[in-house]
Length: 73
Image (cartoon, rainbow, N blue to C red; front, side, top):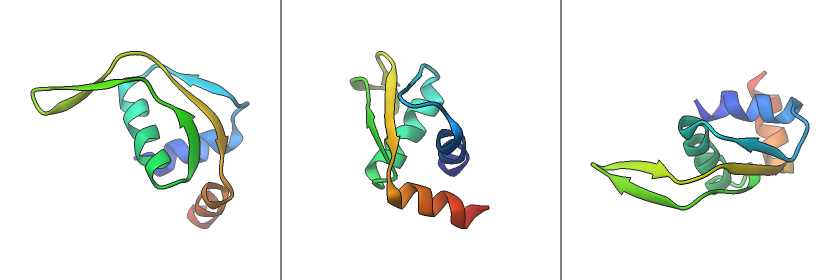
């Protein structure tokens, strides 16, 4: 779930590099919602699923992201 990752990111030393394709996909959701600022690797679609070619780097959790994480606790 993206919000679980967001909670982890709030406590992490940033910038943070993420390798796990599942977590990169969650970062994509969080970035689209403007909850984090991140550089994501290029994505291609294979059999209808996104495949990321590289790592994501999360630079920061936005104020909106911090607020969303606090509401979830």
